[in-house]
Each structure stands twice: as structure tokens, then as C-alpha cells.
Length: 637
Image 1 (cartoon, rainbow, N blue to C red):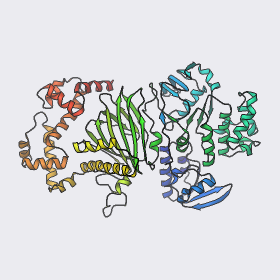
Image 2 (image 1 turned 90 degrees about the horizontal axis):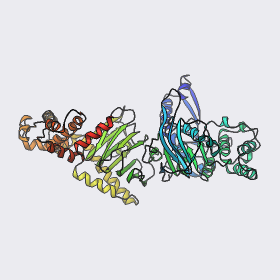
Image 3 (image 1 turned 120 degrees about the vertical axis):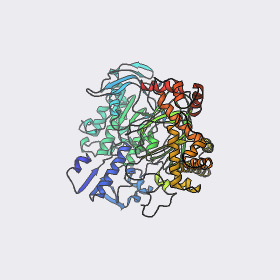
Image 4 (image 1 turned 90 degrees about the vertical axis):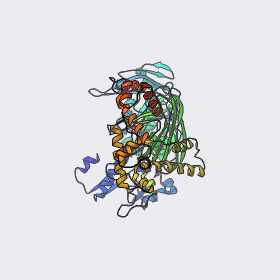
């Protein structure tokens, strides 16, 4: 819509509720686009009830109430809680408290669907063999725009027929044709759902399936619950957008369905009326389709994330809500792994604004795929103490692998993607997400460099993508184990965690910028860097028959002592450690070739016996090479 308007080359824009129905990632993109338009010199008026995304966009805020201008100033004006309470404004930041949203258990539920298949004509299937359930309480149905949330709502109410699938209501099988009588739906377009002459008549018709003795009482009750009493005699089409929204919600709830499904029910609602909707949905088992983080955080007990698969969903838990916040609120939350997948937990720790830790400890029964959404913290540091995880970043074709004893640094503006956890051994990882501005505050900006645009070794402008992998030394492992056990309750706990995180970050940045290490060691940067580069090339080219340390030093024109000192300073490991890493990386490539035996692979890498190669591979990766090969073949199939 915005693109079509901009094609007319206007000099001013009026945008009314433009963020309604957008997921958080699309809302951030919208904010970036509006900021670009503003820099081009256009005048822009934004009318919106959702305020959290406007903080970095607007220059001036106007507050209206009943047709009068009641306040005016910069955006900080809206942070006043008394002003928001008096005029029904919503939160200006998305750091409001969030409940512990439990993942939906695929085996039990208020309404359960098995083997669901559905697709539109001449389009790929949206659901193929999917199994999902909606438990008692309020469940958030989450997913990006276009993921199929509204389509699923239509399938669960019988408005669209399933291609295949079985339905259970309170653990009893039911026929799809009976869904419409058991469920109710409030769709996004309110104008298509209002047909009577008055608001009161609209509610009365919606309650026609209720016993006559209760009908009048329920209609009057819902008029009061959603603040519709003053407009009971008005024509529905004469109401404002927010008033229509409250009316269709009342119509959906007044008939007392076993499972109401509300699709984006808070479009156009201010803070005062949002509170009324929250109080209403908390009274029943409800499936809530919404991108409104404030609504979800205040009302939902469970989360169901699309896409779903045959096991009831790809995600172990749904991190969508917690990741979409800017991590302003300090917290320490633990999410147990569903018993159907294994044992263990994911712990989410935020010791301060702009710093988030995900501490994972799983023992899985089978491989587990986890889908994550885009977050506002693009700088990541990962440490794998045990296990293996394959992962991708959305928009990039590479597949990355994190294994036992490896650490990684990732800088990317696109952080959504998918990870696959393997079952070969327990998975224990420490993942750190940082806001670049937080890290920049630790460095003095060089002359001529813009403020808040400098971190040594990291690209801070343009297409930001950087990926580096290294080996976890022993002293770092002790820090990681301490982090796994550290509480985050008192101020001293949070300070300790921050100090340990910065130690880990400093270690990886040190690996990224070897020039600092060589300078500290008293080495000649240019000559020694060239010497080590030559030594590494020789080792890579002669993995089958590598030269001795003395011969290698002679080949690069130095002595053994200086070679070891320079190699350790520049590479952060020993000469033998580097050779082993090269051999293991090459071994992974060769194991994907089914035509080579383990003995042949070991011989090519310089191991005289197959057992020597297998022992070295198992010690490095934690699994034998034969098992690694089987897994590669399984993935190829």
C-alpha cells in the first residue's frame, strides 16, 4: 500500500493505522521505510494506537481525546503513565511484563487435529500431515504474515474444507461438518460481518443459538463488557473502526462457542479498550491470532507457532514473543523441554538492556527442529560444549554447523532462521546476543569515524554479514560452565553475568583481530603475519605427510621457538592444533563421499591406521566417523 502511494510522488502523507495486522518484523521494516521517506523531506502524519514502533520515527507527538488536542510535544511525552492512563494510550515500549508462555503439547487439547492436509489450487500445500492442538486457556497462534494463520482458522471453524485430517474435541472424534456449531470466528475485515440495523440487533442475532432464557442477559452483559452500551441503538456502519472491532468481538463471544477464534481482534483499539478485550478473552478457551505483542503478553497462556509438522510443530518452544521485544526488561526464565522430545531446558537470561543469553541443555529422543524469528540483537556469540546443531540464516544459501568444542561469531541483520539439533549426544550450548550499540560503548571511537559506528574487526555499515568459527580453549570452558549455573536475581548476580559475557566476547573479538595479539607479544605484524600465512598454507597442502615443527620453521625462515610463539599469537592455537582442525574439516567433506572407505580417508589425512583416524575424529567431534557418515546420508535422502 505504501509503495503504491509513493509511486504518485506525494509531498505529504497521512497514514492511518498502517501497522495494523503486521507482524513485528514487518513493522520494523515499515518503520525503516518511513524513516527513509522522512529523510527525503516529506511531511508525514501517522495515526496509530500502537506506539512502540514509532519511537525512532516521529519528531512530534499529538494526543487527541474526544476531538480535542490535549497534549503536544516530542515522543518522550508519551512515556508519562498518568497521561497514558487518562487518555487511554497504549505502551510506548514493548518491554511490558510477559507471562511464561508454554508450548502447546501436541498430544492433548481442547481441540485437536491430526494429519491435516490443505492447499489452495495451483499452489504448494500450506499444511501437509500437520498435527496440532488447542488447549484450554488462551492460546496465541503465531507466525509471519502469509504463514497460513487465517487459513487455519477457517479450517478449524469449517468455513474451508480440509483436504484430509481427523478432528477431536475434548478427546472425542468429531465430523468436520459439526465444527461451525462448536466454534466461532471473528475475521479481520469487520465490515463484512455487520448486517443488522442496530448494534443491539447485531448482538441479538449473533446470540440466536443460545437458550432464549439466557439470550437477553448475555446481550446486555456483552454491551457492558466492551463498552457498547452508549451506542446500542446506532447503526453498526456508523461506528468508528475501533467501535466496530469491539462489536464483532462481542458478536463472536456472545453465542458462547466452545472455541472462539479471534483473528487480529485489536486493530484500531486504544489502551482502554484493549484492556476490555483482554478481560473478556480471559474468561474462555480462546484461539488468538495476533501480532499485537501487548495483547499476547497480557492474555495468553500457550503459544502455537506456524509452520507445524507431523509431530505437532517444529519449534521446541515458541520464542516469538520474547524475541520480538527489544530485550529491555531484565529476566531469567526457564522453559522445560516437552517430554515427547526428551529432557532438559532452555534458559533465557537478560541481565541488562541489549544483552540476552540462551542457555541450552537437552538430551533428545529424536532430532528436533527449532524455528526462530528475527530479533533486534544482530550480534551473536555461540559456544558449544556438547552436541551438534545444524542451522541456517534466512536469505542465505549456506548451512552452518556448530559442534562440540567450537565457538562462533555471527553478525547479521537477518537473524530469523531454522536450527536442527541432533541426538548423538547431549546438547549443551551458550548463546549470547548483543546490541551493537552496547558493545560500541566499550570502545573509543577513532578520529573521523561516526559516533556509535565502530567495533574493532566488525563491519558496522552496508550489508552486514560476518561469520567466524574457532575452538573453545580450556579457560573459556570454565567460564561457560559457570554461566550455566549462575542465577540472575540480585543486582550482584546480573553484574557477574555481564562480566563473564564480556570475557567471552573479548575472547572472540581477540580471535577476530590478530594484529592486537601480535603487537602485545612484541612481534612484527607484517613480517610475522606473512610467515604464519605461509606456514598455514604448507600445513594445509601437506596434511597427509606434514613436516616436523623443525622442518616447518626452516621452510618459513625462522626457528621453532618463534614459530610456536607467533602461531599461538596469530591463530590462538598450536601448530598441531591447527593441523588437527584442518584434518577434521577435510574429513567431514570426505565422509560425504560414499565411494571412500574410512581407511582411505584416514590415509589421505595422514593417519596410518583406521583406528587412529576414528579415535581422533571421535575426540574432536564427539561421535565416530561412521555415525557422522550415516547422518550425512540420511540428510541427503
